[in-house]
Amino acid sequence: MPTWYMAPTIINTFLESYDFSGKSIILFATSGGSGFGIMAILAGIDRGYVTREEGLARMERIVSFLEKADRFHGAYPHWWDGDTGKVKPFGQKDNGGDLVETAFLIQGLLAVHQYYVNGNEKEKALAQRIDQIWRDVDWNWYRQGGQNVLYWHWSPTYGWEMNFPVHGYNECMIMYILAAASPTHGVPAAVYHDGWAQNGAIVSPHKVEGIELHLRYQGTEAGPLFWAQYSFLGLDPVGLKDEYCPSYFHEMRNLTLVNRAYCIRNPKHYKGFGPDCWGLTASYSVNGYAAHAPNERDDQGVISPTAALSSIVYTPEQSLQVMRHLYEMGDKVFGPYGFYDAFSETDNWYPQRYLAIDQGPIAVMIENYRTGLLWKLFMSHPDVRKGLEKLGFSTGK
Image 1: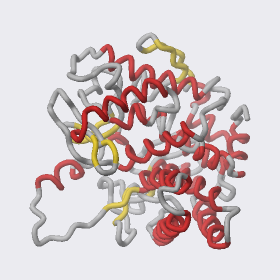
Image 2: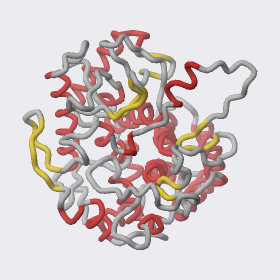
Image 3: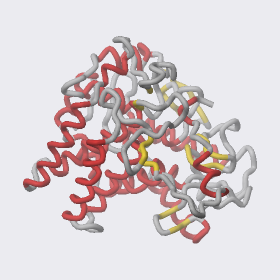
């Protein structure tokens, strides 16, 4: 399994099996999940679930944390100590900058910037602080000596030993767009074309479950559904195209339909799978954490509610069918903060847990489906528009 899917099993086993009496718990904070979370907060502010003043206070607190938290050539680590902002290693050699998670965070911050940039004095001041964080990320550093590709990790201890050049297609497209868009450390367009698109090798028309896909998916014929979601929480896929893909919306819709069709076919005969219960993506799993995907190798009989629900922008009728079914399943899958992260009817496994990288996209994509709020905010940022133009994207708007 590719390195980027492996989360330490401490997440799944430590909290459930360890006796904490007389001991303190150090809380982790996650950078990418925080980016998704702050976009969800924007939706909450805009809908009046929290007041604008309460929302601003929360955003100020988050930005204050980010200003003091560990950064590595401007890029944040995957995890921090939630109190001190010091890096918490995601793995032995993953104790430095994580450019992919940083991109997910920056995507959210740029949406926040646009929400406040024309507001009152306190709001404008926050937008200016966010702009500085954005400008501080040294995307060029992560080219490892000026190569035309971006590397996922850099460690002050282990340097480039993680050795993960990022090629498409997977969830990382937003990283390349932001790297090109940076007003201070912008990478040349060739980094996108040579590194992400590999000079056109990313184009690989094929069919899965009888459904046409245009792009090559790393390591598989059709990736897990977070590949259709993380980059497009702010980046609007509607009308988006470039020389490698004639319609990113159509491609991501078809990727979602492949996932659904596979679950309906259900070749491994798992209990519960069907038109009202589908969705394979990265989440907690029966045996830890896994990137569930629509193939027999990566299908473990685990349904992750975020998969179908965060795809509502692509498949509204089909996603709402799943949502209604999940509500009918009751408190086995629904808790105080929404649907739990994952479950398996076959294994009678219903963990009452949440995961930021899954929970955040549900709220964000539902809002994008209803109003397009987060898409409008992110796409309105002048640097984002320049970056897309630099790479040859057309938005149709």
